[in-house]
Length: 249
Image 1 (spheres, rainbow, N blue to C red):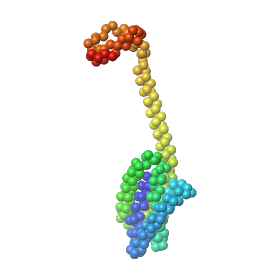
Image 2 (cartoon, helix red, strand yellow):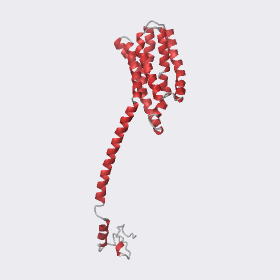
Image 3 (spheres, one colour):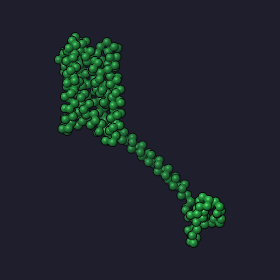
Image 4 (cartoon, rainbow, N blue to C red):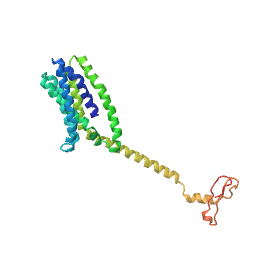
């Protein structure tokens, strides 16, 4: 969920940000410079955050939370200024901090699922992130068409990214609730299974086996045309075993 919300906000920048720069009065060349800064800083940020996470100074979750909240607040506050220098600072923020989500995605997943489930988890994550990518840019443009300004679009972008950080922050609570529910479900199933086993035991062993053996001793006649017969000298161990015709055990 956190990665889907992050990409939903991150993708909207590529529609809202260049259009906003033009809207406040700057030229297309200046737009190109700002967008190039996003790409350049992201190229540096991805390996940097991977290296920084290996230092163990901060946990992966703390890095993701800090990155999400920082970029979310930057998006919310951007419409308050129209300075080109502020635009360039925002471009650095957009290129730097969402890069942490990309570079630490697999590491964060390993902290939530076991290694044998990582492949399925990454596939499911890619599916939800695809929905975020598809919806992000049309949503930002639609909000602008409705309101006539990019201000609300940036605030929605910042909200999505900030909520992504809050989801990562609340992840231990989700795990605790999930584990408690799974434990309760397992306990109920175990109690139900134990009750069924006791009923089956009572039905199966309602009559002792000795009674069955005594009943078998009292059998006087078994037709040799349809059953085979096994006898021993010891009458206490006589068993009549039905078999197919003309088969003798």
